[in-house]
Image 1 (cartoon, rainbow, N blue to C red):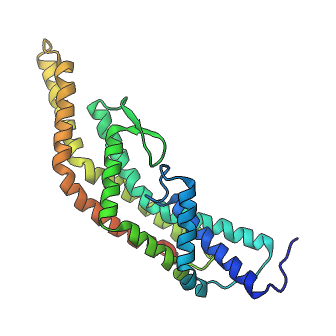
Image 2 (image 1 turned 45 degrees about the vertical axis):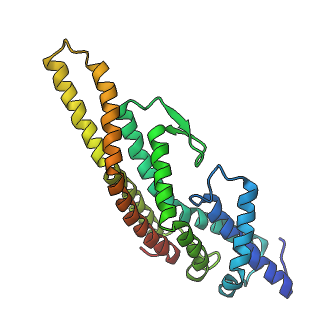
Image 3 (image 1 turned 60 degrees about the vertical axis):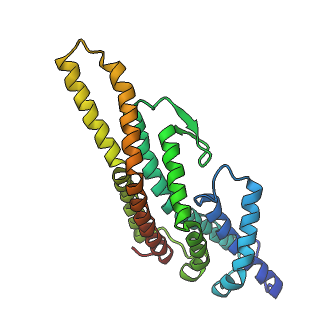
Length: 262
């Protein structure tokens, strides 16, 4: 077993910086906006180094290294990666909820086949999901969510010691609440358009049964698209206020996650 015995001051400072770099890198890799697949890996590495150097004078006072066993340090690194992914996961659930609702809406409008490549996740999603994904990103940037996330990175060293993250009952409870928030947000943001499309389909169904001579498919397809986009456009201002409220609640979940309590 490899052991670092009697480390000198420079080695302690170096290990401290490595721990800071690992946590910051894990958060940036999984974080919204910063962790986009469209951003090259070189830029992510540069951002991680810059942020780590910037917060090093503040964060190092909260880091105390008492065990230099190589296996202990490896365990700490794994915990830091999981912790960074968990912090980023809180905001990603908001986006996932909106994308899920937009996917359902696109299916009802007949857009289920028309998929595009999302630069955020580098996967195929529907056109409406990509549109709403860009919308929630713009709202996130408009309320300075990226600055709040950077502050959370700096404050995490004070509230959550290096290697102190444990997946316990409180953390699982926070994640369960976030998952429920995801489905709740999915309904609230896109409810007007989805309800309008459901009513439209019901009306078309009644017309098709009462007047079978009408070619309902030719009429229903363009009308569903036009009505869905019209109602979605009218509800965007309402959706922005809903998203701001949910972003504020997610910030509270981030602080609770860092503190390890619900």
